[in-house]
Length: 402
Image 1 (cartoon, rainbow, N blue to C red):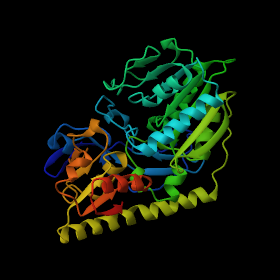
Image 2: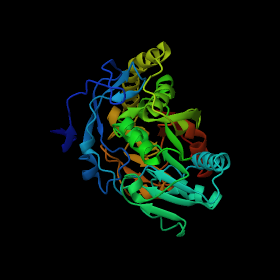
Image 3: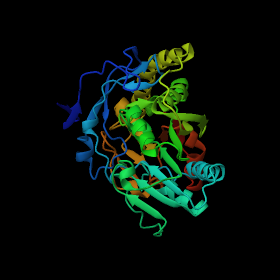
Image 4: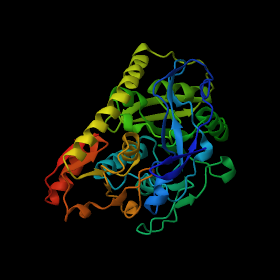
């Protein structure tokens, strides 16, 4: 099916809504957001405005499973997703994120005694985090990701092995001491099946530890983080939901903790026996989902009004942060003309265009000759970092948090 937006043909998937939770198969699903059309791949970089405007779109319609506590896009269609080398979601150019990642790597190496061990990362991206784990503990690292591309700025390391494809289990003949998947499980439309396959591959008697990092859906609901609702995420995990799916898959959950100012959850688990009994959903979670449902449309309406004020005041606004949240913001509020430029510190994105709305992505220095009146950011935790960069460039401007 196709739509026409801004004069361009859009490929839009509109599958029938799923009637049961993909994790626990419960049919007790409560709607959280009304259906909306978003780019299917918010972090894919497009070579020009025309192709960016015609980027594939999918329907986003969040619901809460009242049985196991996950949030699920009941209109998800995996057939329109194609992760390739143009998918760029690395945050390692941010000093704040690098500090977090470095601290996490040090913590994992120390607590799991990762010294001259084997580490396997599923969904390794460009390999930045796996490289940290290998260098910190003189480990062997195996990374799997169809979007992997070698960074020519990084030296080759014979301890690192990258496979440009999805991980398909023990057939790769890797016997890891630790398996890690960061910002991956939320991209899997059947996480229970995936985790069961992973558990089967580990086998019984193995000491392999599993570490997962996923967006924190509970924090997203409580903070009304509406720009984190992206099509690539068919599943959003609350702490309770993450524990339920791990136990159902045959893992013993050692710890689930919020990290990175509560934006993410880290789960650490070891092989155990499957336990399909779920912890019941608490009323606080249902109330948070209800408030999010009410606030989602309010946030969109408020920002459409703000864009009208920017347009009416003949002000120049730019977006800082050409990642998933920024792309969702631009598309959800329809900011294709009111915010004509996106700024990002990741050089891999420069010269490319934003999915769905077509903004050119430029480096911060592009603002030097024509400073904007307003800088819009879609993630408040980077505000201080962005303010410092602007101050270093001598740019005085208003910063608005979307």
